[in-house]
Length: 315
Image 1 (cartoon, rainbow, N blue to C red):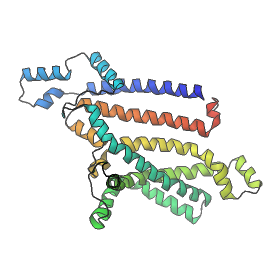
Image 2: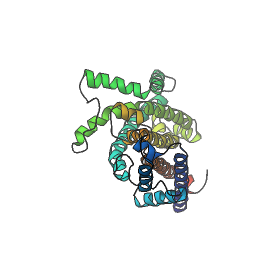
Image 3: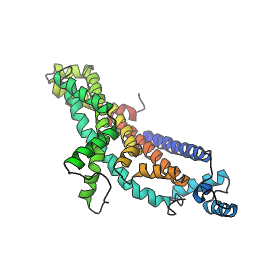
Image 4: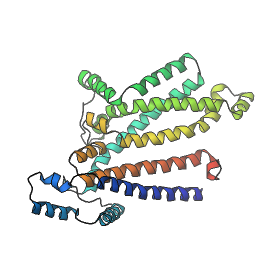
C-alpha cells in the first residue's frame, strides 16, 4: 500500500508542475497589456512603465514564473491588480463559499442517487426501474441554470422559504446553509441523475457475476446478494464519477454562483477575467486544478481500499 501511495503522490506532484507551466504560458500569450487596461487609454508612458515595474510585468517570463511558483509553495499568490489586496486572501474568502457548496451538492446528489440506483437495479425492467431512469434522463436534460431560476421562482418568490440570492456569511451557520440550499439543489439534480444511472448499470453488471450466482444458490435473496456482495464491487465506477462530480461542482459552478449572487471562486474568476486581473485568474485556475488533481489522488486511494488487487499492482 505504501508503494502504491508514493507512486500516486509522485504522479500528483508531476501533474501539478506541468499544470502550473501550462496555465502560466497560456495566460502569458494573451494579447494586451494588463497595465494599459488598468490605467485606461489616455495613460502616459511614464505611468504605464511605473505600473509595470510595480506589478513585476517588466521582468523576464522565466523570472515571473519562478516568483509565482515559489510564492504559491509559500502560500503567497501575489497582489491583485484590481483589488490591491493579497490574492491568497481573496481566494480564501471565496473558497469558504464554493467548497461548502460543492460538498453540500455532492452530498445531496449521493443521498439521492445511490438509493435510486439500488431500487432501479433491484427492480430491473420493472415499473420502478423505468420510472426512476425516466426521471434521471429528465434530470440530465434540464440545464441547471434554468432549474436554478425555477427554484428561485417557486421557493423564493412564491413560497418565500429561501432568499433569492446573496450570502450572509458563516457568522450564522443556519442562514448560511439556507442560502446555499437552492444553489446546491440546482447543482445536485443533474449530478444525481448521472450517478443514479451509473449506479444502476454497475449493479446490473455485478449481478451477472459468478460470485452473485453462488450467493443466490446459497439461499440469499436478490436484494441480500445485491447489498452484501454486488454493491461493493459496483462502487468502483461510482467512486470515479463522484470524484469527477466534486471537481466539476467546485470548478464549474460559475453560472450558478452568478444566478444566486454567491461570492465564490467561480464568480471571482469571472470578475477577474472581466477586469483582466491575470494574477487572480492564474491563481484561481491553479487552485481549481490543484483541487481536481487532489480529488483524483483521493479517488485512486479509495480504489485501493475498495479493491485490494490495486494495492498489489494487479489490474
